[in-house]
Amino acid sequence: MLTYQTTRPIYCIYFDGQSGTLMGRGQLDSQMLFIYGNTTGPPRDGSQKDIIKEYARAVGLCNWLQGKGLGGPGWGVEGIIRMSAGFELIWCNFTSPSLRLVSHLNVTAPLLPKDKSTGNSEHARGFRQTQFPLPTRTSNPIDPTTTPEQPNAPTNDREPFVRSQAWQWFVSVTRHYGISDAGFSGGESRVRPVICGLLSFYSSWSENQALATAKDERDFLNLTETGAWRGPGKEGDRGAALKDLTRRRRNHQLDSVTESEAVIMNKAVERVLLRITQGSGGGSRECSGIDWRSLIDEIVQRYYSSLIELLNVLTDAKGSPGRINHIASQTRLAAVRDLTHGFLLPFFEYPSCPDNASGLGNIWSLSSPLAQITYSRCRYHHTRLLAPEEGIFLNPEEATLKLAVEETLGGICSAIIDLGFSVEREWSRGLNTEVDARIDTPWKVSLKIEEVRWKRKTEELMAWLGWAADWTRCVKRCQWDVSFSDALY
Image 1 (cartoon, rainbow, N blue to C red):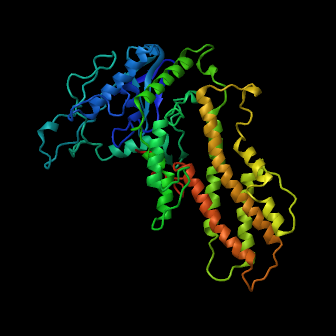
Image 2 (image 1 turned 30 degrees about the horizontal axis):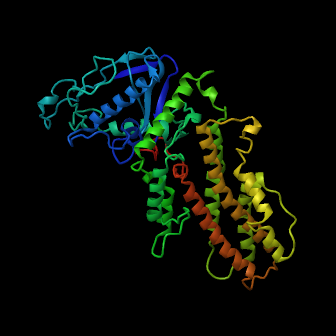
Image 3 (image 1 turned 180 degrees about the horizontal axis):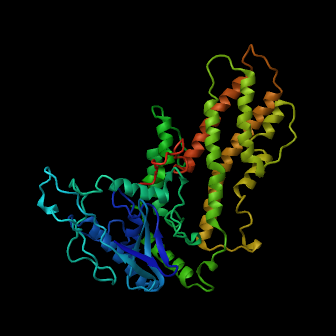
């Protein structure tokens, strides 16, 4: 085992989205587009093994960085970070002074004593030989002259750690990225992304890819031309359809990105890396200074747990068949109102409510001036002052982030205003309704119908947001010897 340590902060380019995973489909597309302009790479015969393709990708990425004058030993961009079960680093040149070898150990454990049931002479020696020879050269990676075999899982019963090796691998992953008895892990804290240099194939210039994705989703997810969900269909399963909506981004591929769009991305990456590594005043200072990561985390933290709580309250509000209890209806409505009021609080001023039904309908209508100003305050809550006239100048990548924040909040705000105004209307009606336990009053019937609609609206908002990772967790705290991670491939 070779252990290295950096001698200074280093720049790397990061590919997101399970980009180091060799199984499945689509995870390597962004790298292939970056190197070759397509998702398949150059023509190769079917005997090419995954590790050979990995060498080719490493060589291609490192050569691109060097050829564009973006990095070299001891300066600029020196590596590529990819996501797998954890995060991995492709280092371009091991002669760089930015990296030092701190230990070089043979960590192979002695075999257990040979018993009568084991007669394999290959393992008669005290140490098992590794299939990979230790490196003797530290220059740039090149295609190997021979095909190295990927190591197979040891099956010899004399291997002392064969039973625990998979578990130890899993524990290592969850300590960094999962959940254990100690709670949530801290993630990969050694890498600090420059968020104002984030580039994405979801950008507006990737039109061909966007059109292809929209067409696929209209067919598979039953969406309208404008992207609205039609529902599960006559014979569809609503729960399964909502799950597909929540996880729809997992099916997004880059097969439809054209060669010209790939060139646009390459040029954009070159421009951003030059700005960050060699820009006047030093890299990220050419950004606005806005902490985009904290801003985005704030939005997620504000809404993800509250939406779960609201959905649970509305799920519990189904009640039992038969006559509707007035007091129970008001109690449930008060619990829902507590949550929707929390959503609206920073953006909303209560109006003077009239006593008549028509007046209530007008005030709490989604087309009312009150609804429109509340929506504006909500959608632009974080970005209202991010404008040149306020002295804030955004680079193209930050402008995309600003649009993403506003579009996300736009979807959230339209839903919570619909929910909140409807709840306030029913609350006002309920206060003016005479209590009569003997009959189901129109208000109680109307409230029951609205509760069903509120629940569906909340489910659809959560599916549209697609924050599956944030809503997946252990219900109870894990025991000391139990770990959980939803990020493994």
